[in-house]
Image (cartoon, rainbow, N blue to C red; front, side):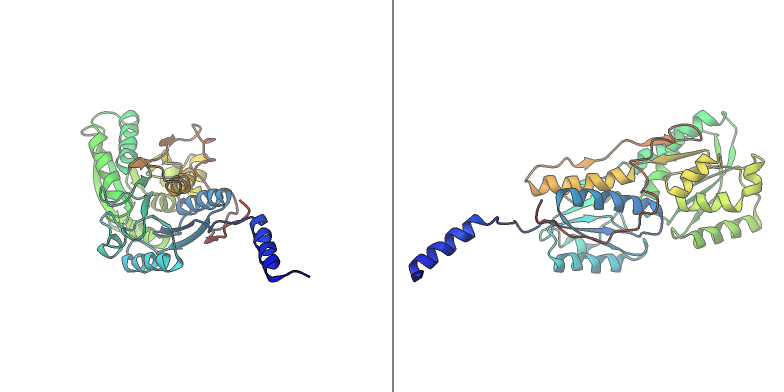
Length: 323
């Protein structure tokens, strides 16, 4: 029979022999939306890497770029959950003061969408200005000087998701008289909204020779302008990549699309969180290279861009205590 002192000693030795697991590192990721496969691809990259590190990951999406209040509420939910770090896919370049005031309590990294300088620890993403510049340089190589190609702009929501920077990059890179912009249409990154914008425009205007748009807009244009595309009267450029844009590239319906390797960016975001957890100093900006995709060129380089077939969004990754 064990005496009280011997029992206490035995308990101490027994507990010391058992592995002590650290509290899991908790990362909360906020997205503008999950309406298209761009952010779904980011999501898969984050989920994959969080699993590899054994991190806890919670994902919330605001439902659209107009839903600033929703994203603010979700930031507070991240704090209530006990997030050690927030990965913020901001709905606006200017961070809401209600969120910014919490940065001293909850360290935050910007993901994908650029935000005002020096407001976050670091940014994981590519320059949307460079994405636009990449489109502009392609236009210079594709269209002759003084061709004044009649062009319709359809980037998505005005001034959101980096569209203002894409537009500036295109404008700065395109040589004079290559394009004649005949219209600019702005609206939510919703297929229904973009389709209606295009239909309303076409009801009163000729079919444009060129459409430069975001992925949702260009997917809609491919479906709505089948005849002009087949006859070579209209061509389409996409500022970023989705599965629908990729399929259109394979069919020769889209002339060129950027890929900023969004699935890889999802992984890099979790990598950055892991580095911060270890106390490393992060570069101000981290991101992959931009790839130009055209029919028959670089179309095999999408493993780090697009989510796997059949992948469904992951909203929570449970930490594995055995890692």
